[in-house]
Length: 197
Image 1 (spheres, one colour):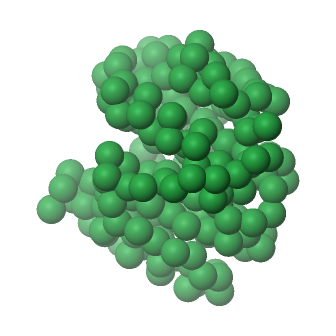
Image 2 (cartoon, rainbow, N blue to C red):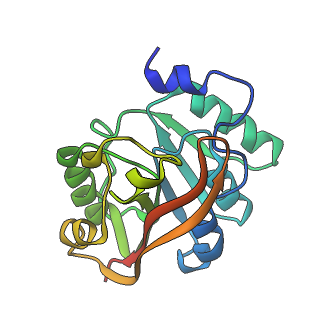
């Protein structure tokens, strides 16, 4: 059992069952079609987008989390495709996604850079990446996210690693994050919406 399986092995949904606020407010900017969710956890965001009529695939390294995502989808009368895999091994494909969503997907720098390169290749022309992550400033708040600076990300890093995309929204803000019991309180986040032209 990996550490995420252990973390998710309880009845309740650690990050709640409601979608992330940034996704909820901006999902209309993602073209209708095939959407990939990275490190999707227990499925709250994937299920939300499936309810809006998108064709959703969710990947996560935790089999326990993906089972919970399937259960949540059933409860909401939608279907999503769940894949248990490590992002290091997962083939994102080439020009096959209308949208890719990354919500609090914190990776070691080398893997993050690699995944960002693959995201650009994997998006169709006109495809959109929507992402929210904690910035290094989050270490002051301690209201969620990894406790190591190298796993956190800021706008300058995202712009450098995703330079092939056109940023239509890019900001670093402090906002109230109320997503289950592990993301709760004031949080320092970076939010982006970027298009593959």
